[in-house]
Image 1 (cartoon, chains in turn blue, green):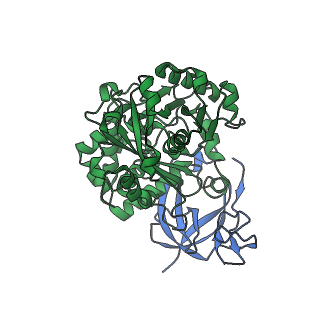
Image 2 (cartoon, rainbow over the protein chains, first blue to last red):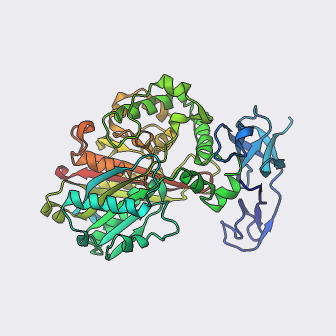
Image 3 (cartoon, chains in turn purple, yellow):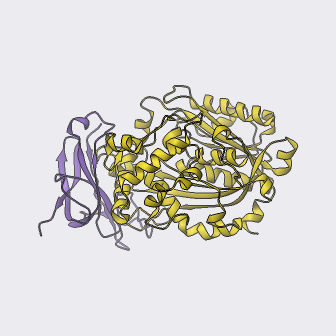
Length: 113
Length: 388
């Protein structure tokens, strides 16, 4: 598996909609005036799974991996890894990029109350 | 003209299921050739009688689908590449039926076939779409099971559904498959075995996950008059819907889109859910089947899992060949399997697993998980020939 670097979402300069993964145009208004932006600072966990089977040999030694879907609240749902396997649906999380053995990937970290 | 008018006088016939094993290095066009040969043998048609072709495959690369017309030696008036995964069957039928009704073709062969090389599924999911490659696959490389694990978990959180409910569904479908010759798995599966099996992506265990196989499913679409002249048993199309990216702006992936077309589907058929004798849902994972049954009005929203789990009545009428969880996933992610089984049941050709008095069948499909959900949804109601 080649190392991956998660792309930034794009914000539409015309209607402000966020598109992720980026595609060079806005899926709401079809504008091509798109700007790479950082993800919103926080989101909410929709669901969490523990991946126990991977198609990639490089990943198998570090299984299980905790993966979450996160609603970033702006029409943008992202998949993330999580370092804390106690993370649960509904939790507020911050999402940033962290280095994993196979890439620089979105990672959800539980926000402190 | 209503949808039901559109389908007047149209027959869907000659259900074919061919299994080539879990893995096969036979080229996909060869699987098409064998399947077409079987359609012709069972129908008594000659190859030159076929003037329409609908195909569904994930393993034709680098060939474009139309290359099959050349390799099969078919001169066609109508062709469709319906590459919509689990929604391919219903949508291929819908378009083929409309083509025959419009006079664009007389005999349409609808075929879904795929080989499955040892690394075939891995290669497919690694590069299935740009969004999936960039935004899903790097997160554990679990393929579609990762996405459906999250969807299933969300369904469980919102409804209280349990793994025991899914165990009952999987065990029930396996029971349905016990006399089905093209089933890959037809030995009994107990709920206890299910619950003790290894996790793939929690909460999905080994028995929740459909197994890709090499194989094909196929049927023919023609006029009733032609089917009668050929002496073929056939089913009639009453109504069909499709929807794509219906709730694309909603964060939750739990609404597939069947509910938006449900009233039209039943109204055009002149039927309601209680009139349906058998239902074939797309079952790559158990929760996906339950979502279809709920949205189509067969089970109450949010309570489908527990009701399905406790009902032998539902086991009898739902996924009567054991579904993909027993038969494996062949041909555009198994998108034709439920439809072919419905034709078989409606025409009395199901052999030892034939249900009694099948007059109406509903088949639903769900396909193409390019990011966090499937984008293509369909449902079709068919009637037995004698139910006029």
